[in-house]
Image (cartoon, one colour):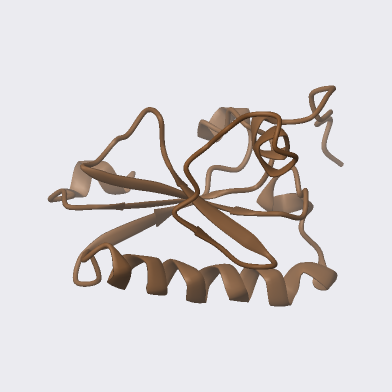
Length: 122
């Protein structure tokens, strides 16, 4: 059993969803939205964020299966839209030890960078 306790208060992504924090939304549908990362690790670095609050990937359950599948398909569409369909990376950080700083599940879509083996974490 995990000792994880979600931080109190709404996450920055929830505050964007609720309109409290303005953000340029690059894509949006009923289930998720895409914004640019404010601290990019690649020339194209976007965040794909579900509107449903799930703190970490490990907190997802069977009920989230279609949402997670939808996010994968949207990631491919976004890669095509931004011209990175031939080489991009998807990253989901799960937990503080993996670099997660916002505890609202999100996927990093990164491209226009030559990723090397050291970037893979091997």
